Amino acid sequence: MTTKTDNTRAAAHVRQRATSPSPAPFHDLLKAWRGTRRFSQLELAARASLSQRHLSFLETGRSSPSRDMVLRLSRVLALPLRERNELLCAAGFAPVYAERRLDEAAMAGIRLALETTLAHHEPLPALVVNRQWDMVMHNAAVERLVRLLGEPSRVWRAVDPTGGRNIMRLMLHPRGLKPLVVDWPDMAASLLMRLQAEAQANPANAGLQVLLAELVDLPGVSAAAAADTPQRVDVPVLSLRLRIGQATLSFFSMICTFGTALDLTADELRLELLFPSDEASGAFLRQAAALSSKEPTR
Picture 1: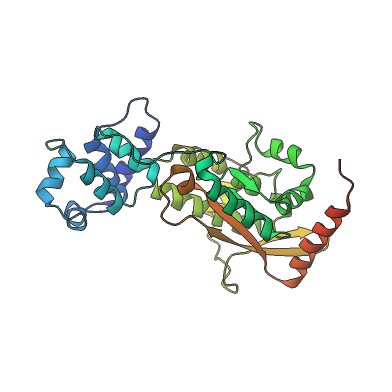
Picture 2: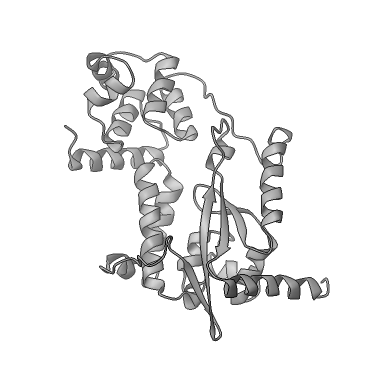
């Protein structure tokens, strides 16, 4: 039986391997991922339709896997495509899944789907993020929302001097949305819990591990995460509530991903759509869009 200590050690091993200059051998990666997914050898072997003895030989390096076996184990372990490639390479095979830029011709359909959705969601905010929560695309409504804090480029530089546009930093940084968020400690705790769950599900995502460590060090974040405050249960989903002057705006989000992605970029992109929780918040967004359209072009 896999113990909590085993899982912790496995996750630590995968994190260390993710930042190591030399890749770990296949058998170490397989054992680490099995520990992270909390599978016993018997359970993983049954799910992958192989004997426990064969799996044991694979984990000790006594047997080498076939390409099909690596892909089968990757599917059963629910590995992201990037980590499936890594497991293939560790076993001596070429990666299967390509990583294309969004501006490549092969990604035209993906790009069009994202651009169309972003445009159609106006005047409501919509954005596309990668697996580190860096903003890849967004519509004008997101820019208007950030403008509540000041000139957008200055706001982004304040929350991330390196020039990045990370949504989690925007939410949790004291010079980001934090001053406007109602019940910020509850929101911070929820966001951190979400990030921790993602990091635990994929400890090989070194970028997310670094982001999580940085966010915990921001003022008030660790205290918010440690506070034993109950989540609101009078709403169907957790809302982002912003205090703008005398008004309180309330939004909730819906996240969309591409089904059965076969490309690393498509697999790692997430489309986040914000919706107003009440009519007053919707009216504010519509009015902000109308006023923006009347502003002279700079």
